[in-house]
Amino acid sequence: MQRAIIRAMLKKLPIGKQTFSEIIEDNCLYVDKTAYIYELLSSGSKAYFLSRPRRFGKSLLLSTLDAIFRNKRHLFKGLWIDGSDYAWKEYPVINLDISAIEKDTSENLYKGLKSAISDIAENHSVKLDCSGGPSRMFQLLIHELAKKYGEKVVVLVDEYDDPIIKHVTRPEMAAKNREVLHDFYKIMKSEDANLRFIFLTGVSKFAKTSIFSGLNNLVNISMQEKYSALLGITQEELNSNFSEYIDLVAEKRSISRPTLLEKIKYWYNGYRFSESEIKVYNPFSTLCFFNEEKFNNFWFESGTPTYLVELIKLNSPDIEEYEGEATIIDSSLKSYDVDNVPLLPILYDTGYLTIKDFNIRNDITRYTLCYPNFEVKNSLIESLLKVYIDEKRPEKANAITEALEDAILENDLEKFFSLLKPFFASIPYEVIPVKNLNEKYFQLVFYLLMRVTSFRVNTEDRTSSGRIDLVLENDSDIYLFEFKVDSSPEAALKQIKDKKYYEKYLNIPNKQLHIIGINFNSLERNLGGYLIETL
Image (cartoon, rainbow, N blue to C red; front, top):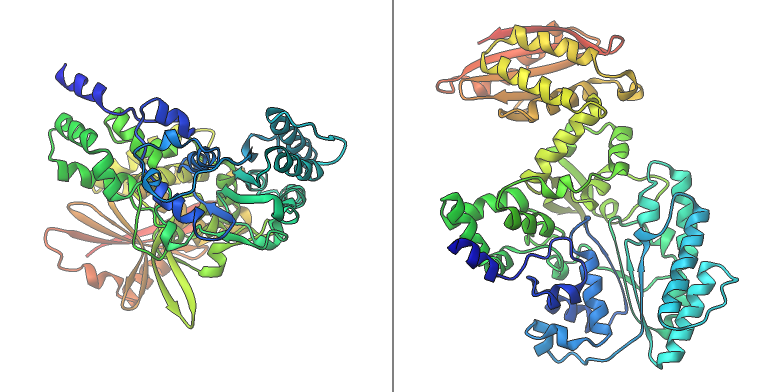
């Protein structure tokens, strides 16, 4: 009872709330980001763009900007900006949520934009000539608002890229929607004299030349160090804003506060959006954790974008792209176009990979990407496993991994491989990427199966003479796997021996070492043969 009373006295957790005024008026917990907003408003620039993953607070940021520009200072009492020298003043605001507009065809996107502009005009009691296209209506709206209020206009655009990103695996459709948006957004350049401030958010960073060719003053702050914590929760913010919640959960779980903090960090921290070492927590997952007082894959369960799954299937990525071995140069990470959407930048932009490290050579910055945290790593692997097996029957993935784990625990490799053969045979023909049916595909599926077990798994493990395809380790045994396609298990085993991959694992106390050569048959799309030796 005492615990319930204490919890009831705390500020509410604003799960699912994206409106700043609602959060403040309903006495919800708000992590104060107004110092960063003040920096934006006083920097001298007019137009900004910010890319962040879904459910990371982009809509709340725009709602906060909306409240500032509508001069709702009473909502900011006690927040950083209220004590600053910011000159409070009311401006007319145009709020556009592009994700709420129909975008299945370019014609519907065209009509949807017109309807959105018409609704905003009606809310401001402004009459518009609706005979023209959305670009013309947008231009007229800016003119009319500036005239009516005698002030320059603020434009806030949420999910600017939604009509494109939803069609990334259908380039023709994406390109058509891009052209509609290009003509629409370029109005903001021609109306520069009537605009006070522009802020656009989205998930992806499509090239300025394709979307914003006219908006050449747009400042991309997505990877600027000073805004790396504009969204998300820093460790300091977690400690101070959620202190009482931390104590309550630690007490409930009968663990120390430092132990709990380490677990929360392991599950939900790790997002890094610049070369600064600042990392942030996923705000949605963090709020859900304190609400339910248990660890879960909250962010992932809120929905994996269909386009991302389709893009992964089209690319048949290498394992390194999930294991912190993938590198990408600065220019490729910062922008791309709809004609050729690369997987790595999309995985970064959508929050499934983040910056692990970087190096600069010959003035070119190269980033190493990795999973941000356990929630994303564990959930993405499970999701990919379902994609590469049969997404219509997810229970098949759970059943096979449990059986394979039992076989390894029993050190029964014959049983292990007897389970694998019918498993590969059961994968539907249409799931397997015929064009990319090589060692990497079989290795990826095998890796995903092993990854969701409780064992330690390492892929492409480096030795002095090369890389081992996969290493699996439990408390009593170490298994080295080498894969071949349309070759022989003898050739795979010979490679392990010739290159002496096993040497670094010899003489590990209380561990039995096994080397295993596997050959996959691309014609049969199945396990072709295997050889096992115990050293």
